Image (cartoon, rainbow, N blue to C red; front, side):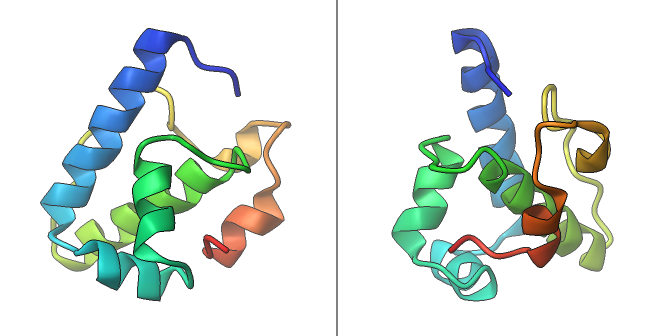
Length: 99
């Protein structure tokens, strides 16, 4: 998925807002996602090696929020089921790991 500059900016804001709403730390998210805090921060900034990584983080945050009885703030580009996007590796997303 190729994003424009504005779409990238909005997606970073949306991920950050849901990360803050979930109340998790970088360390907790890293442990849960089998990676490092630096990698989680990189994904929050959309500095990724695999285009699936923002989707993995989105799903993680959505699960954290649901467990707290909260509704995720809407995403402008990370919408719907990743399986609807032919270019995404849904097996990788389903693993729920950022490694």
